[in-house]
Image (cartoon, rainbow, N blue to C red; front, top):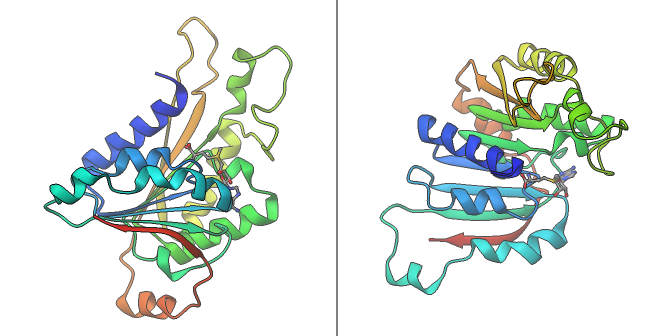
Length: 231
Ligand code: SAM
């Protein structure tokens, strides 16, 4: 399967094992991952955030119910919400999640935005678990002879060492544990360049107090809701 499918399959297998109820996808773009997760047994709340309002408005319809959904209502409740906003901003709508995914998002963030984002994600949203995927620049030698970024909008592409040291620093700072893996394996005969997309899986080491969550809930909401569906 193509690489993007492999990333979605990776998230789905993680969800199968960990059974999160509230899942958010940051930088959800065309909502393809959310669409795949829509009828996953355990999920009761699905949220997508992107800074590109136009893409949410054009593609969000894939998350709306079909007539069949009204004829055969789900046994469990499911709400799906899309927000237009930047992941560098805090919004109480993103509190209390079991899993937040950031698939090929961070390499699109300028340094100052990335710094705000990591504090918003791990300090404010503080979900139970986080999955971050990003290109592994070491793999690029297998993709093209000339070194260049895989996409013109990429602000950086990291080696395994760069990604892992960023992720380990954050984990220490915000009290998470991180494990590394990836998708898209090189042929066994090529030299060790790692995976095409590298992935960090972060798990929170503590349980946040009600008080701390309530405190954060008081923060002003800044995201704009562009889709809200209750199944
Ligand atoms: N996650 C998608 C997937 O797996 O199909 C692909 C993500 S796409 C490569 C990167 C997305 O991040 C774009 O849709 C872009 O609009 C979004 N993005 C960039 N900066 C952002 C920000 N500051 N806040 C929210 N979304 C942002």
